[in-house]
Image (cartoon, rainbow, N blue to C red; front, side):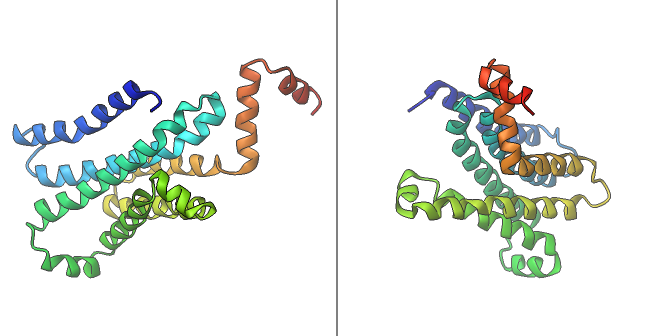
Length: 212
């Protein structure tokens, strides 16, 4: 396993955040409705981690360090884990484990249906994130994992519907998502690789730049 200590540090860092939020709730430091704050924090945490996982590939092109890809799957799985905790917190704190009401909520509150759709997409990615799945699916694995892009868009719509009038933070997430999606365009990928080559003083990159 590559970078085991960095992996452990990343694991502990991400896992500690929900524990800290639970501690704040226990000491009444999350306001009058700590359950809702926990639900919102877990949802935003899932979105942030999803954006971080999508940032790994552009960062590899920009820096030339392959280690970013090593952590991509771990961060992506944590994004799924936070999303599951987001749903669990919603069912516990806001619905009081009245599972019969959940179907009605899906109909009456479409943003909840959007959240479930995004979670289903992340579930498909998490279940097929193993090396066995990569070998079994072959070329289809990459096609399947492109689900992450529509899942991100649906998750953003879910959040926008929730925040509505206060969309400042959402705008930041949406802007970052747009940048990360644009970074998947082949011309942008080549530009990032070229920037890295110039940083490293690659003479071929400088020559190509002068020939433009």
